Amino acid sequence: MSKYDSHLKCSFCGKSQEQVRKLIAGPGVYICDECVDLCNEILDEELLDSSTPAPQPVPPREPPQKRRARASSGLSLNQIPKPRELKKYLDDHVIGQDDAKKVLSVAVYNHYKRLSFVQSKGNGKAPVEDAVELQKSNILLMGPTGCGKTLLAQTLASVLDVPFAVADATTLTEAGYVGEDVENIILKLLQAADYNVERA
Image (tube, rainbow, N blue to C red):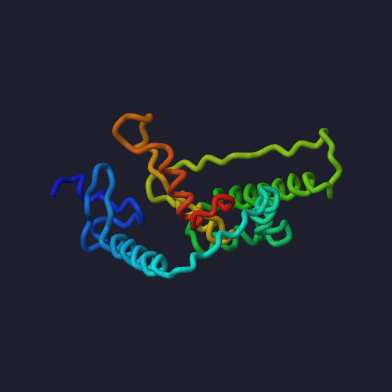
């Protein structure tokens, strides 16, 4: 076995070769025996459903405004944990990294405040003034392998009930070359959101 064989993982569920019984290789993709079994179950259910004479009617799509309002109304500002509560939750689940926990807790709370303000401004609840502009802040977590960067983000995603996807940027290449495409990152996020585009 070469040194690259230990890095092989299922392209669908992300399990490594050691976590499954069999990993089947295709051109640039891999699928494990568990995902094959799941696909077979789905196909069996669909074939049984297709043998029934009355097909299910497709429900009408709701207007984009309603979908956006429903998707963005997941948590209101008073439902979002305060920065102290977020920090305490992170303290319970992540060891060390106190400065990063404080900064992330405040940044996440401010992000939701900003979303709430923009949403209320669009609904006409808040006065529309161009003089007030809430700046968006980004965070770059840097550190050596294993210091807790991904764990912090995963823990925040779990407490806020938002989809979370991890992607390795070193495998990304321009379209048409060997390697992964940027679209694969979006696909991972979409899969984490159970294919709910608004939630992703």
